[in-house]
Structure formats: C-alpha cells, structure tokens
Image (cartoon, rainbow, N blue to C red; front, side):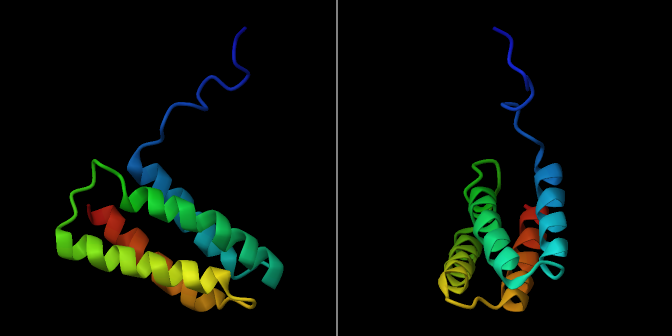
Length: 101
C-alpha cells in the first residue's frame, strides 16, 4: 500500500531543519509556562540531532562546548520551573553554531 505521507521519511536539508528550530524558538516566548516546558522538551532532541550530525565538521573543542551547552539545556528543561529565556538564549547560540558547520 502507498504511504499517506511519502515524503515523511525524506530527511530535510540542514538549513530547513535549522529554520524549523528557529521558528520553534521564536514561539517559545508566546507560550504558556506549561507550553514552554513542552516545547523545550521537543526542541532539545532536535538540537542533539544537529550536534551529532555526521556531516557537520566540528572541532573537538567545539563539540565539547556544544555537548556542555546541551547538558545545560537538559538540566534547565528538567527543572520544576524552567527558565525559558535562558533556554532560548543558549539554544539560539547553538543553532547559529550549527548553521556555520
């Protein structure tokens, strides 16, 4: 049988994935606190995917900094009342770094 969404398994190019992440981060401010937490839990795995993309050419030192930043985001997301501003600031920086890779 033919798939209802035939392109669902086709990976998006990096710039489109990063634009999607930027869009999600832009909407973070407008969400309720519960919505912010929900969005942060959805954004974090997408950031991790970009960090581990085998086509990205990160130097060892850059990758260490990226992983530490992701750990900070994970810690922020796991808090009872996460700080969306702090999450957004760090996540925006990561997206910009990924765009340069």
